[in-house]
Image (cartoon, rainbow, N blue to C red):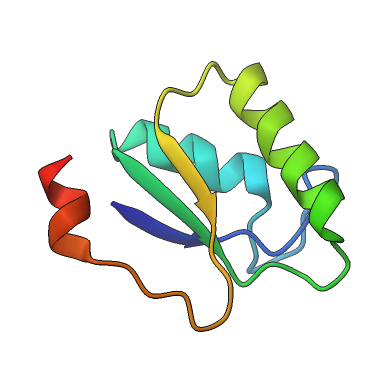
Length: 83
């Protein structure tokens, strides 16, 4: 499982931050089963965020489980590791 910041949209890169594509590519590189994107910029509205994640998953032929985390998100890590 990888928890990775994805502050910016794919078309933006800024020193010290990743975009969605960079985070998903890294998750694929380390063979993560799950990738949770965090620290997402408020510049994204929900629809645009979902669209960009879907487009990135398709363009990279990504087979891992990718989710956008939100404030106060809580999940059972042990349950995830069993999957």
